[in-house]
Amino acid sequence: MSDSQSRSSAIKTQIPELGLTEYWYPATFAKKVKRRPVGVRMLGETLVLFRGRDGHVAAASNTCPHRGGSLMHGVCHYKGTVACPYHGWVFDERGECVAVLSEGPESAMPGKVRLRIYPTAEYKGLVFVWMGNGKPVPVENEIPPEFFEGRETALFISARRWDVNWRVALENSLDSHVMYVHRNALLQLMEPYQQFGRTGYSPRIVNGRAAIGYLRDPPRTGREFYPGLDDYWPKTEWRRLWLWIFAWRNARIRNSRPFLEDNEEWGMHTMVDGRYVRSAGHHLPSMFRFDFGGQMFTRFCVPIDADTTRVFYIHAARRKTRLGRALRAAYYHLFRNWALNINFSTQDYRVMAAQDYDAPEMLSASDGQLVRWRRLLLTARGMPDPRDPPAGG
Ligand code: FES
Ligand SMILES: [Fe+2]
Image (tube, rainbow, N blue to C red; front, top):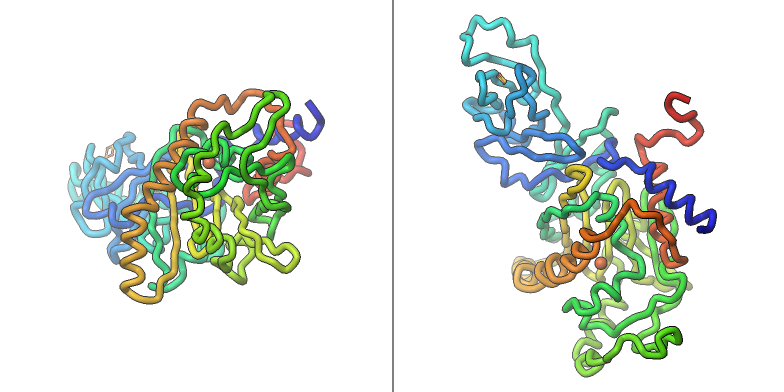
């Protein structure tokens, strides 16, 4: 194993298994929090979500400080509060114990006990939570800009649970697997088979928060001869029979303007020789973004536990008119959601779920984006300063 390869494997073990804490993460859909408390597990902790007095979603630690009752199994008897199902201690949205329903109004506990409260924010129907130990940073700089665009920007969001660690979920993007794993995905069958070459994606860091990868040379398409096999791959080229149907679509995507024209960091831009090259990349704390040309796709991976991740798929598209938005919604629900989030992404999930992530690695030059992303994670907010001596040392 070369030096740089063993260094990258060493870095892997320094990235926190339960995620970076000093960041905002999506927790759940606002519409799921109604009159009952809702439990959400993330970053290895369980939260209870309930509505505050003014209707905003509040988040608190789920464990009752009395004797460990589970607040998500409790009841919101009074507006802006949650009551523990065990002895009826009632907490408000500031986390303050305001009544003990099993003792009576003379109970000595109100005003003396607190729950930990986590700051929340809501955009486009999604509830974001800050679980950091430090002061929350402004959420506006931390989540994709399309969350702050007006009505003309439609976001289609769905969530799925993957039984893999969050690092695995993120590392499964922008490497050479794409064409191989997805060769029979419907979306990929609309494009020719591509070989990305020996070095694959060239990564670069933007604003210390995004690792953007692009292909320096256009991929080679079609069958190629492999001397070690004395044969060709792919074995058949049936797709050539129908590719002419999608030639127009593929050219349109290739030549479309970037989704976020003047925002390189979130738009994942790459200009090569004055020409925009379709590109993609990773963004702290745990996003993968891909500009599909006219639509932006985000895979936001939220650690649940060491072996589980909640993946939010976020599709953004701009349509000026109501009819345009309705057509877009129909396209998403009838085709795109299935094609990308299910047909395509389930192929990813199958290989990840069976992967031995802790095995020693032998990286190839085409793993450059992976190495860059791991290094970026080490510099994230809340990570130990590399100049500090190790704890206990
Ligand atoms: S454990 Fe929650 S009120 Fe007793
Ligand atoms: Fe994939």
